[in-house]
Image (cartoon, rainbow, N blue to C red; front, side):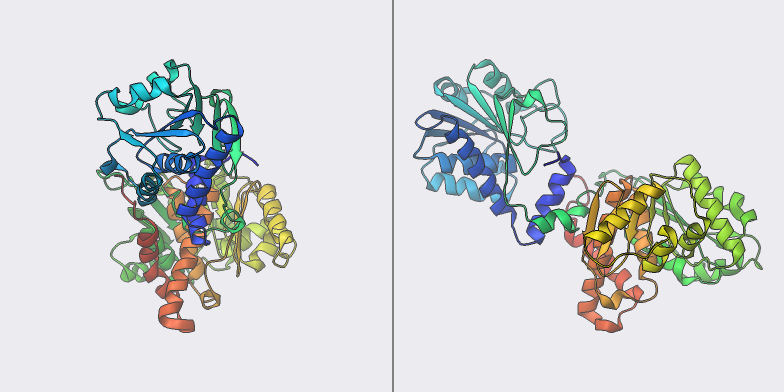
Length: 496
């Protein structure tokens, strides 16, 4: 299996639970896999010392200890007091280990006294201290333990990744038992890499879910205005609801500022919808659609935005379509993150060859897809995924092909999204999706990640709205539920 990133580990963990395989089951399978590896490589009848941290890596070690009990002489050392174990499933497995009569010892947090004798007598040391996603060099008891274990001359087996991996102070294992797939960057410093399946369901890999939202950057506690992202929406003219919905959705997805560049004739109408939007009129009060000569005025706002959404409500006036083509080319030339939606997509489709922009996300429905690809979007199935990936490769961007099941691809990766429902086939929901995608781009997310996270979040908001108002829902009903969905799945929105 291809190596995966630490971020993708979080995605799969959360999506597994969403698809019916809870984290407790994944941990049980992981710990059992570690025990199996140890028994397969001579641990039976030996003294095994398992060092456990306060997170889920420690929980994996506690499960391994229980499965080894009776087959080897096992001791567990907690690197932090049991009251500091951070996760419920790790606390659960501590209790189960003790119920299985596994000896559990605690370090006092300042010395190695609780561990030194056990380390001396051990034949094998299992490192279950710190797992994926821990940044910086280990400190405190973790640092002391790493030094002592490395100097012990014992056989060392790491769980998932060696503690301190990627820093100067790291466990040097004989082997590492990692789960589901190797982690990106694992090499000789991990010893022999043993991959154990832990029951991640195929749906968790193929389909978007709440795990995608784990990729959204956390907000620092001391964050100030502008640090959560700024979006510029360029749209409107014959339609003023589209850029407004798009802009409000970007705000509700957690950015700090949204600028809305609209033709002067509709600026006051858009202002009237919300005091939260910063409306930037283009042209005079008689200007009712964009034209190529407006590009300079619109680009004056570009530097203030971390991402642009181009197209909501611009209509099909030839001048507006030419404006969209030139705007996209300008953003591609500077590598600006940009979401392209609505009639701007048809403009690009009519253009034929368009410049590549790896930071762009195009969000076509089937008709717009056909315009861009020169061929219809295939029926649902493997052929649809390949077609979307081929278009993404051809255009050098990420494609979010909207449908009953969305297909997202950057040409290399493919993700499906099945959140949402038929009642969302109403005007404005595509504008909401474009706004949320733009917000996630503005936060610095990879375009593929921004698109798949946005597709799930908007679809999930639509599912909540359906439960409340049924098939009479409006796009504004979906918008109203968006913050609730994010709050439900992002309890860690701010840094701890």
